[in-house]
Every structure is written in structure tokens, then in C-alpha cells.
Image 1 (tube, rainbow, N blue to C red):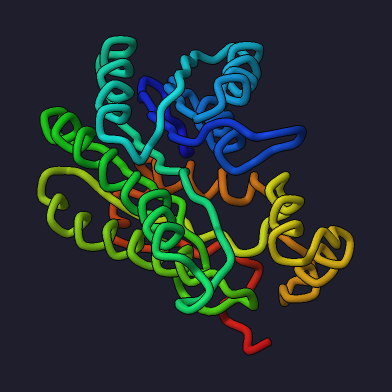
Image 2 (cartoon, rainbow, N blue to C red; image 1 turned 60 degrees about the vertical axis):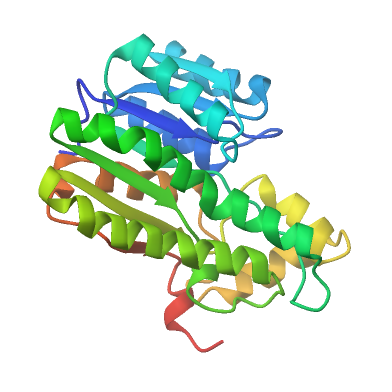
Length: 264
């Protein structure tokens, strides 16, 4: 089940800064382990090449390049390069996002605009260039990585991020309806609190660098008692990308250990 043999997956944000497994790295490797060929992009070429190396060492096929998901020219070049390499795109994973602190008073207009660019415009641009390819093929699956912050307040002021991720969910839902009769499905995965290398940077932004205290607080927030891992997100993406999820469209799959169902 959930095999992706013969399929090509385009994964944005496929690298991880530093050691460990971020969502994009785990997603690309998990898709490859199910048989997909991977074409990945990241702002950091070294990070993307680390992901490529893992896939190739495990016997998979992968290629990567630098691309800014918020720039139309970069996204068009990325899609063209993937088509030149593999000749098709069956799966698109939009995994670009970033959180900045602030509310409408404390956040600058420039930061708010940047938050919308990173968290929703990038997926819009990728869909703009990939959906015609999938339509010509007669099928395709788009999975965008959203966040539970797009569903509810999760304890820290990040209005730009929350607005962007909420908009991303609606972008997938409405576009999924529009393209449903063309054999194309669009869904979101909404991770909750995940213990990835990103947590260190979040602690610097939101907890004045108190990494241990920040981690303990995040574990305590989750009804399960612990944060999830990047592999929890990756496995959800594999499912939604697979033919076994053929009747799931326009949905947001929440992966959060019960966080959004709790009142804490």
C-alpha cells in the first residue's frame, strides 16, 4: 500500500538547516522510499543536496536546485527543470513556510507582506505552473504543509503566519473543488507542535533563547504529552499523495497529537 512507483514528486523546501530531520527532508525521503522520483528545491543548496544524497544512497532517484518559492521566475524555472529531468509531475508538495512574531500593532507591514508571500503565495505560484501539467496528464496530487496555527491560536503571537496558513488551507480547498473533475486532488497537512531542528530558532524568537524551557512547554501543551516528529508529517503526506487517498480532496489532515481538540 501507498506505493508511488513511477511517480515524480516535486518538493519545495526539501532541505533542513543543521543536523536532524526537518519536515521537507523527511517528506522527500519518505516519498522516495515509496518509489517516487524526487525533484527538490530549497534556498540553501547544501541542505537540499544533503537530502539528495540520502535518497541516492538508499537507491532512489533525486535532483535538486536552488529556488525562491516566492518568485514566479524561480518557480517557473524549477518546474521546467523538473519536466526536463523526469518528463512529468505527479505529486507537488508545497513545504515552504516561516513564522515571525507579532500582532497587528507590533508587526510591520513589510513583515506581514513577507509572511503571506512565504506561507501562501509560494504554493499559489507552484500550483500556477504545475496544475496545467497535471491536467494534461489527467491526474495529480498536491499536498501543502499548513499548520494548526491556521486553525486556532496556539499560544504565541504570530498573526502573519496564522493568516498565511489559514489562507493556504482555503487555497487548497477551493482549488481542489475547481480541479476535481480533472483528476487532480489538493489537500493540506496541518502539523501541530513538532520537535524538529526549527524548534531552536523558534525558541530564540519566542522564548528569548530558553531552549529547554521552550521545549518543555511545547511538550506540555500537547494532550499526548510530547511533540511529534517530522516523520509524522511525512507519513501523512505519503498517504495523501498515494492512490489509496484517491477520494480525499480539499481537506486538511491535522497531525497534532490532539492539540486542536483540546481546550488547554
